[in-house]
View (cartoon, rainbow, N blue to C red):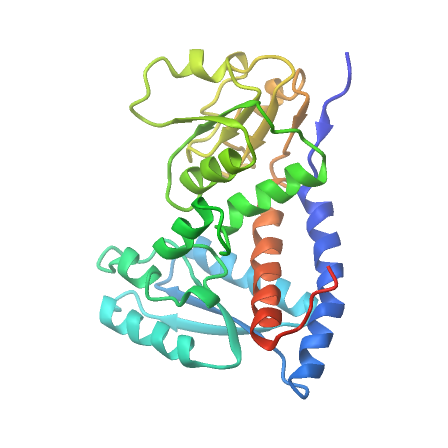
Length: 287
């Protein structure tokens, strides 16, 4: 039996970060020493969200970007959050804006996401950015799906004509990834909580994407041998959305958990921010 290919997102993310450093240096030179910033907005005190924001700040530091942090209390209103976004939209030193999800329940997230101007929507969360991405136009795709596509391309996973089954339909993961796979000429089936006979559908897949947010939800015996497994979940104890302990044995390739999709999300967000700065400043990327 041929050993499964490990789609190592951690190694690729480190390579991407290394390639971004000289690009950031060119931006700093163009800006007379001023470093470009990625702004992160954290509303409330959710520990997991605070950890994610800190990780993104660390990634900024590694490539030479500034991390501009905006923190609002749990009691913040939609109008207060919109005002913070407006300030960042107008801030010339900020090239990307990340609104950490989820926000407290009283916040109208969709309204706030869509307040981010397109050129700073480096996390691909606006309706305008989503629509442009879906139509194959210029936009920064949602960071996790875009990172997955970069990982598959790097490992030369052929998607043309292959059947991809995406389990999960969130607006920042399942839906945009399905459209990216479709734009890459895969045949795509989207599944969700109301899908009938889910195991039968997953068994038809050449590429299985776990994006449902439930630990080990996709069982190993649902997956046909030789498939490519993309596990976009991460849960306490290191479990993903797929029962990888068993499924990876017969897979052609798989993303490990951790170390697969997660590092690519942050690397993609940082890369989008650098690209946004280059675009606004008229710098031709050497990447």
